[in-house]
Image 1 (tube, rainbow, N blue to C red):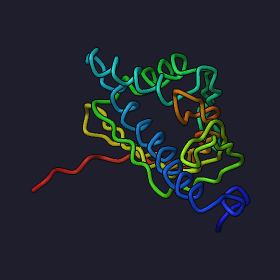
Image 2: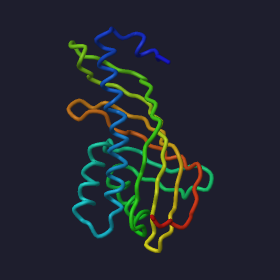
Image 3: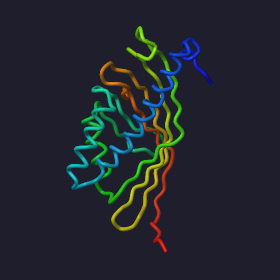
Length: 181
């Protein structure tokens, strides 16, 4: 489905929107990488890198929350607050892996510069599926399924950033980790 912003765009602007869509999707992928780094208790270099990534992908005053049936109500404003929430939530795990799937980006508004390859402002919505694996030291696994519902904004000189994020918890389970043959 092509939304109004794309229908009104020139062919050159549509190419710019294709690149913008990829950049927006990569913001969510970098979020998964950063979150796994923040979960590495005791590895201060990894945690510092995770926080650096959060500062790149979140707008300074981003509003972040977790919702859904059975979800722990978590939230924060800005990358530092959410990094603290994530690190605290993940500290008891030995390892985590956040997998991002099925991403859909819809542009709300985009303003192009004189050059059709230049975006000067914009906003979009993105939804992304989540599968998160969390391993406890006693060989138990917690699997979490959900969706991220984001509003992203374009900031000149910075790029696309998450302005609001809602992690909608869908379901989860706990089980023993198997052994490989």
